Image 1 (cartoon, each protein chain N blue to C red):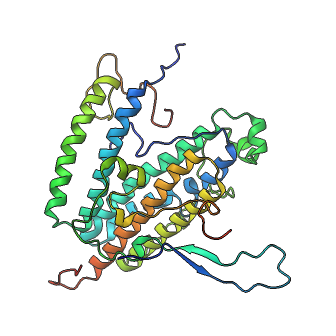
Image 2 (spheres, chains in turn cyan, orange, red):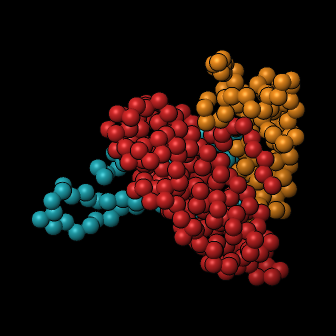
Length: 75
Length: 89
Length: 189
Ligand SMILES: [Fe+2]
């Protein structure tokens, strides 16, 4: 069940846009959009790592970094 | 007026162990709310519940009660209202 | 009834005395998609939802109070030792002149919390989809706060809270499936 966590799109860029256009723009599509009804016996993090990540299951973990620190577009 | 004491590093270590076990319990609890037939998850839930109780007993012996209203024992004098509170540490 | 436990759900650490961040965080304290709204929304809906999903609403509603306490802790730590001058620089003088350092249930723009933020339609499908949307909105709010915050330790706690919204959304999506389920038919994995 592999999917990308970020989607991109290209807004129209006008020659009269006052700010430097950001293109492409991105939005986040985290795993709960794809998992469906969670199947039993999915692999788990150990409790310490689960706490640190905010979920017990790698299948539900979604990494989020500040825009700019993320390595995708300069948004 | 006496200043409240600063908590030692063991306080933070033990607290984090409890937070980790209790967090896994929250996760399993919510999961079981929608998966009530998952036998293995229930077993894991019960094992971790035991683990959590054990850790809290140890924590409370050193740092005082974690819960009020009769869920934890108190020494003399009454310890529940001792600082620090969770938002202060 | 509820019992209080003298611990946070997740450790909250703040590296810098930067009261400006408190101004943003208050959105998740008393804002439309904040933790107070979430807790009250779910605990209120649980009275009129089918038995199969009452437990979930009860438990997520309870967890949201632990998140509210984390947000309060962040704001408390960011402001408790800040001088009036620092608060003024951070743009929270309007809050200060009314409340001093007291927390108040309002959003980042200063609007007080209102029950209009939380829906209770009484229709189980409408309510559960409302809850899914609420979780996604809370997740988005955490993203925008992380984007404007440069305190790495604070962001660590905010990432935890963002991830919790993802798990809550997942469980509410499952609850929707449970409500849709036809009698005697097993949910297909
Ligand atoms: Fe939530």
